[in-house]
Image (cartoon, rainbow, N blue to C red):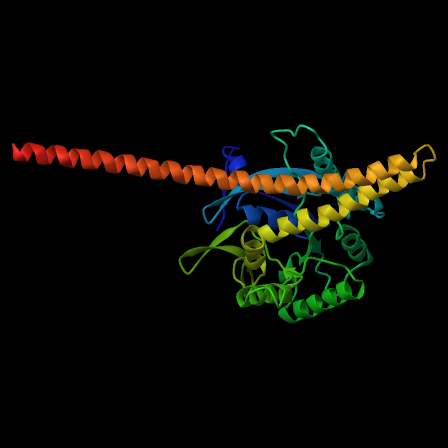
Length: 364
């Protein structure tokens, strides 16, 4: 179980991971984040003024940094919250704002890669996973749900979740999950479905990913409160008919989703972001630049050829840098091992000298 760590000390030594949460007010977005981090990372919205409660403020994108310790591994987690999403009659501006934020992070990386001299403290703020909170209507996906996931999937790993899943009976929840996935398949929305390769992956990976895929969309019951059940403090919600445990897989998919995000699939989500989503965006962006130049009559054919060569050189440079990083890391490891070996040899020689000196004293 993760624990929150205060301050920014040693954050740079941890694994960086960025998670965006998107969902309309009342879908359990804030409670989920606070349950995930086991502390009040996001404040709950309070509308106690009836005169201003009807005002549509619009979407705001708010990154929040928090440090977690997951099984001894420090995770520098950035939560990107989107308060105000879905609160307006027309949510087109919200769609554009989220897509724009995702693409700006890619643009920052692209600009950094183009620098002759890199920034020593450059921070990669690309979003590695986006949880989209589907309202527990019990019917099917709304047009807004479909449009948002369709627009965001080319830029980020979208994982659909059902917030406040305890508002439905088990049968209602199973039927709702089935209809949501049927809609996702029908509209061809490429959500993150825990991919695996039957020919290349081992049996454990295939079994684990198959199980997680079958849970989509994850049914979440979050709670910031603990209650004593059979002498143990348990997170959950008390109802007249019983107690719903947040971390009980029979009651909620929260623990499986949390483990996937912060443990088993963290590396895969980051790799897909870097190797697939970012590279696709980068190719599109550079191609648009070249095509725009081609439409410019002032650009000579020789210059177009030069631009094409530059694109290829940039790709080669990235590959060479990765190889150099690997080579330097291996050299550092070899040097460290050599130093350890030399230190052990020196210690052994000192021990032999002491033993020889003691033997000479006894002989006298």
